[in-house]
Length: 275
Image 1 (spheres, helix red, strand yellow):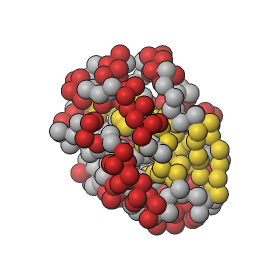
Image 2 (image 1 turned 90 degrees about the horizontal axis):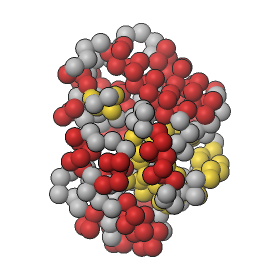
Image 3 (image 1 turned 30 degrees about the vertical axis):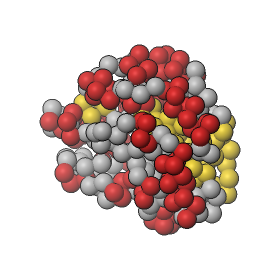
Image 4 (image 1 turned 60 degrees about the vertical axis):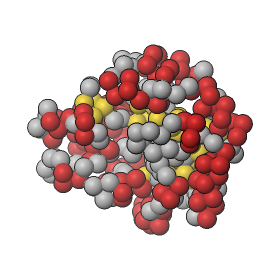
C-alpha cells in the first residue's frame, strides 16, 4: 500500500478561498493523480491556521491574517462530498496544548499531523517571519527547533509528526550547524520513541531549496532503530505534487528496512505492508 496523508486542496497563495477549492470536483483532481501513481490511501490535512477557531489557540499576526474559514464546514465537506480521509495539520504551540486538544477532540478527524513552523513568533520556513533575521547562531536555532519537536511528540496531541527536520528547509540559503547533526536528532528521536508517535517521510523537501527528503537519512535511521512507525506523504498543495518524488522516498525506505506504513481511521493507527 502507498499513502499520501499530507495533502492540501488549495495553494498557500493569496486569493485561494475555500469555496473555490473545497469542491467535489477539486478533490477528484487530487484523487485522479493519486490513482495514477498507485496511492490507495489519500487524505487531506488543511493547515489549522486557515480556520477562525484556531484563533482560540494563538493570535500570531500570520494566523490572524489567514484564519478566515469555518472548521466545521471543512469537516462536513470532506466527509460528505469526498472519499478522502479527514485530517488536519496543526502547529504545536508550547503552552497552548489544552486549547489545541479541545479543538481537535471536538472534530471527527481520522488523523492529526503535528508540525513545528514557529519558534516563538519567528518561523523556520516563512520569509516574512524569518528566524534567521534575529538569530545568527545556527546551533541555537536548531536546538530550539528539535527541543520543540520533542515537546510536540510528548504532548500526545498528534498521530504523525510532519517534515520533522523542517529547520533545514532553506538549504544553503540559511546557516547550518557544523559537525554531526545527530546531536540534535537524538534527543528528539528519544522523545518520539517514548511517545509512540509516527514520523512522516515527506517528499516536500525535494521541491524546496534544501532539495532532499524530510527527514535526513541519519534522522530516519535513528527512527527505524527505535521502531518508530512511518507515514509517507508529499505535502502536496496542487494535484501534480501528489505522490511526487515517491520513487526517491521508496528507495530510501527500502535502504533503511521500512516495509510497513501507517494508515489511520478515526485516530486509530494500523500498519499495512509497503508496496
